[in-house]
Amino acid sequence: LTVEELAKAENFWLLTVQREAFEKELAAVQSGRNPESKLARFNPYLDENGLLRVGGRLQNSDMDAERKHPILLPSTHLVMMLLIKRVHERSLHAGTEQTLTDLRQRFWVLKGRSSVKRIVRQCRICKRQSARPYEPIMNELPIDRVAVAAPFERIGIDFAGPVFIKMRNNHVKTYICLFTCVTTFRSFLLSLAESLITRKIKLYYTTNTQTAQNTRTLYSDFFVTALPHHFRIRLAVVRPANQVSLGFRVRL
Image (cartoon, rainbow, N blue to C red; front, side, top):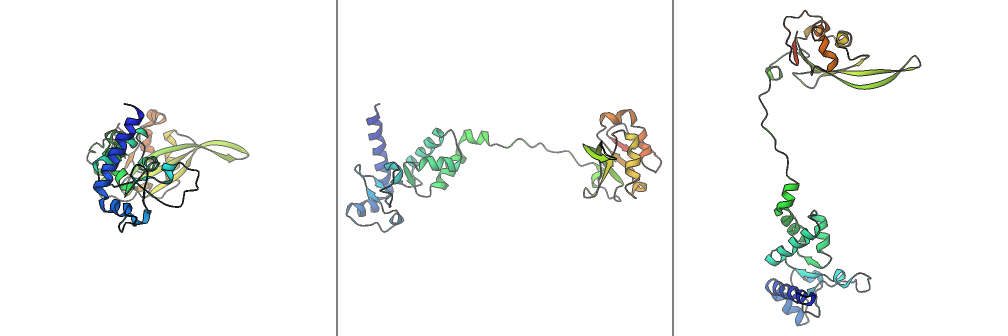
């Protein structure tokens, strides 16, 4: 097919769409009257091919003729849906705004944004690209998360950092020790830790809170520096230990 044949075929289908959707408006414009409908605000006129185009005051603009006076089209015709789909694919499956911008280089679609949005949502390739990852069903919450307990009776411990602070004209490498109440999840304590060794947890915890006497269960991810000292965690709280679990939880 030549370029002229493709242009004639496109004009044929555009004329067919306008005759089906804007029959009264075409008759009014052909008779020299302004259509009394939703197209009146566009001040439409007929071009040399008999197509309705948007009027306006951009005649002296240096833009292309098709951009100054785009072709008027409805929003619900099948040919219009296929045209939007072609523009969307040629724009490399761009979003709604970019597809609408490319479409308005030649055509002005009534309710164009909603029509383009509908086509973009129906695009299978865009659906695959914007699909959300699978969300697995989570297991039941542990009893320590849902059972009633006093604040800081069950705590979780973790470290953040390193943080460099100035001490006696020297910059010392320290860490932030975070104690979180497992039951409430709204109560937490922050302590400055000089080391990640767990034998110093007692110092960090007991010197920064008065609730150490109530602590019975301690959760930790058992970071590398804690592995050689998992038994010493029992010494971190003032209460004597009654049970030790070698998982990530230590019951005190």
